[in-house]
Structures are given as structure tokens and as C-alpha cells.
Picture 1: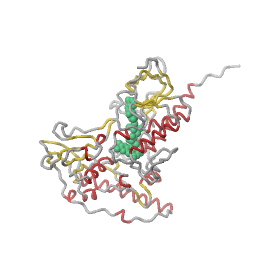
Picture 2: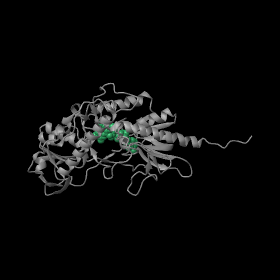
Picture 3: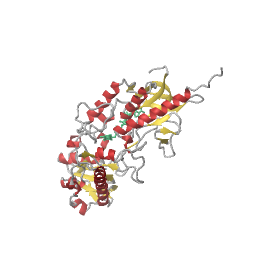
Picture 4: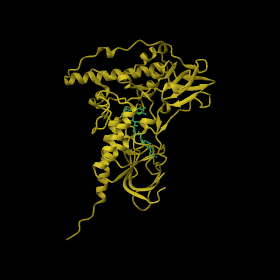
Length: 421
Ligand SMILES: Cc1cc2nc3c(=O)[nH]c(=O)nc-3n(C[C@H](O)[C@H](O)[C@H](O)COP(=O)(O)OP(=O)(O)OC[C@H]3O[C@@H](n4cnc5c(N)ncnc54)[C@H](O)[C@@H]3O)c2cc1C
């Protein structure tokens, strides 16, 4: 245990991609800082992703502007270990002052003097500013629908690694964002009987008219969108870079053997019940898909681009039986289901950040990451400044803005009245 108090200008908590980006921009502006990470750099890319996971966006897109991937071709999808290696190499490239294996336990504002006191597992740090770069996905969330003690294996997608980890028998996967659909498909291909509970989602085409959807979101200004349609803030995006990348198509998934059901609603005496919303959820996903094709077609026409038409992308397969006659109840024992995987997302955990920067619901109060508590900054949160804020490329730009704001505040602090001659 270190006894001396370490002092720095800016303390960054978390060395995932957000913390690394923050450190790069602070370094460029010569702002003294320290990054504290409880695990290892970009560790969540190693520990909280299943074995076969690859990035959802191609390597030319899902990266920081100042470095390319060396082990993945630009149009390829980086495996999770490559993504983690990339951020470790990135941090090395500018000697980021990152200390790993240290947990930040408590941050409080100093009384009667500027700055904050930070209690860590390795002693106390004082800093004038703190950037919470602990990411959008801190605590896996399992909704309290099915009791944990019913004798089945129940895990969150953060703890899913591969099909061999599960007992033999069928699997219910709850949640059909990128994680849920990819896990369901992997389990189905491994020979398991799979049910997939499908809620509200958007499903962009993987690519359309020779351009990946990441490109389309970029040129259509959708990554940079600063507001979303009301009610769509938390709508998940079903997309996959697995096996070279493909468009998520729920009807195709059903044809491959995955039983689609609606939102998981309740549980009684061994029977799970589902909302009667499967058809509507898939129709809404189709609408988002077709809307993107339309927007892309309009963009191509308006700009006179020479990109080949792709009429087959507009074809929607016939509804499979699980859609024409949706299953509303699932008797777990009768169907031989032995596991449930909750691909139901994450919550934030700012219990360590004991400052006046949260509303009554515990949500961070900020504008573009600048919090209501002077000196406290947030990075990596959903819609921090735009749709891209939680994604690799987006967080880099948000970090740049926050570093600029810190530099501005430091500038004010250097002010002295001009002395009269
Ligand atoms: C399954 C999955 C796939 C994804 N795929 C992509 C993709 O392909 N492309 C893309 O752009 N985005 C993707 N994302 C979104 C996003 O890029 C990742 O979630 C990314 O890990 C977020 O980075 P971050 O730095 O904000 O948070 P994290 O990577 O979660 O890093 C936060 C760090 O803070 C540390 N920490 C937390 N609390 C403390 C504390 N009190 N003290 C010290 N350290 C602390 C943690 O140990 C962690 O290392 C994906 C997300 C998930 C869940």
C-alpha cells in the first residue's frame, strides 16, 4: 500500500478505448494526467466477449484515426483479441501513462480547495479533474423475469464463451441485438435446439450496393446524429461481422432452425410466457432495414454515384411458421431446455463517483460529457454527443472535445491580472 499522495491534473478512470482515447488527446495537449484501470488495457474486449466474437464494423472503420490494424485487412472484421491488442499497441504508441490492476473506489470533491480526492486500491490520488471513462457497459443486466433458482444454467451474454460451456439440451436466448442473434446462431449451428426472444431492434443491411453499412451511416450523417427519434434511444442494432459479415435476417435464422418468440414477459411453474409482439418487432426491424436501402438509393441518385443496383436486397423472405403461428408459451422441461442466456444489455455503475453530477435516477447530468459538477467529465456513454459515442470511432472524437474543454479550463486558471507599470 502506497502512503504518499500522488497528484496529477487529470485522472482518467478506465483504460478501455475511451480511456486510451482520452489519454491520447490529453497527451497531445500536454496536460499532465494518469489513467487508472482495474483490469488491463481494453480488458473487456478479452474477458466479456465470447470466443468467436469479431468486431461488428470493418477494420477500416472500427479503429482510431491514427493507427490501422496490422493483422486484419481493412474490409475484414477484427477478432476480439485483435481489438484488445490494437488498443494496447495504441496506448504504447504514445506512452500512455496507464496504471493497471488498480481499482478506483471513491472520488469526492475536496472541501475549501480545488479538485478531488480519489481513493484507490493502491492509495490516494489528488486530481483537479476526473474523467469517468468506465464505459457504457459496466454491469451486466438480467431482468427479474425468471427466478435464478429454478435449476437451469442462466448466464448473461458477458459470461458466454462458446457452446461447449453449456450443458446438453436446448437454450433460450433472450434479446436479439447483435449479441443475442450471434449467440443464437452459433448455438444453432453447434446442433442445439434454440429459442430466440426478439424485442425491438434495428437491422441495417451488412452492406448495400458495395458499401458496408458503417459507410452508409457515415455518409448519411447517422453516426453523427445528435438526437434520436423519441422511444428509439435504447433500440438495439442487430448486426454481425461473423463469418465475413452478413445481414441479420430473422426469417433466415428461423429457416436454419432457430425458434423465434416475442419479448420474454413472465414465468410460472416452469413455463415462460412471451408477448404477442414477434411479428410487429420483426416488421419494425424490416422497416428500418428497408428505410436504409431507400436512403442509400436516394444518396446514390442525388450524387450520381456509380454503384451497382442490388434489387435482391429488397426481397423479404416468406414468414416462417414461428411467425405465422407465434409461440406464446414455452414449457422449459417439456422442450428439454437446460440453459438461458440473457443478452439483455448492461447498466452503468458510478457508485464510486460520489459527486454532484447525477439526477434523482442516478443518471449522469452532462452536456457532451461536461458534467454539472465542475471538473467531472463523462466519456463513452450512449448518445454522449451523438449516435457514435459508444463506438470505437465515436469515442475518439468525444475524447478530443473533452480534452479541449479541459485545456480551456486550465487556461482560465493561468490568468493573472496584468500588473500596472
Ligand atoms: C458484445 C459487444 C460487442 C461490441 N462490438 C463493438 C464493435 O464491433 N465496434 C464498436 O465500435 N463498438 C463495439 N461495442 C461497443 C463498445 O465499443 C465496447 O463496449 C467498448 O468496450 C466500450 O469501451 P469503453 O472504453 O467505453 O468501456 P470498456 O471497454 O468497458 O472499458 C472500461 C474500463 O473501465 C474499467 N473500470 C471500470 N470501473 C473502474 C474503476 N472503478 N476503477 C478502475 N477501472 C475501472 C474497466 O475495467 C474497463 O477496462 C461492443 C460492445 C459489446 C458489449
